[in-house]
Image: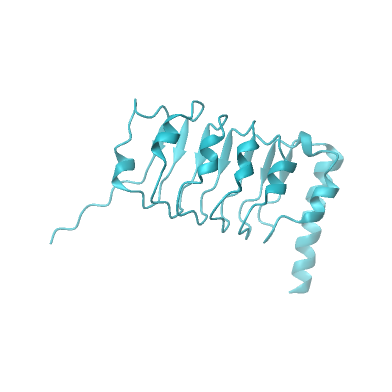
Length: 183
């Protein structure tokens, strides 16, 4: 167990070092078994955080995202948090003024993460395979840049199914309705 943990830590350190040394615009920490975003990364990456435009933390074990993460990586354009245990986002997400795409599929959201509605640059929101029943339709309709909202495999209410163009200016992706069983 300790050997595997040591290997995981070494893999994260390698990926962070590669990003810093090569001054790339992305950080890929997918599949690293992270339960939290390692605090040491903030210090290790402080010289390049402004240049980071893409981060993948997909398929980890994250239960939350801190406001420090959001404010540190303020230039993000793409954020992939798919396959974690997230159920809410920090309010500071609204400060991500360049964010165009966020993948929150396969998490634990029960309602649409409302801070996203205030991110005016968002073009794509993927919330497939969550537990979302409610969606703030009025707020979403005002998101001028939004092109696609994926709510497939969520138990959304029937009112969401009534949303069609021109009421909403984006593609709304939903799972097919389950047929009502006949008694």
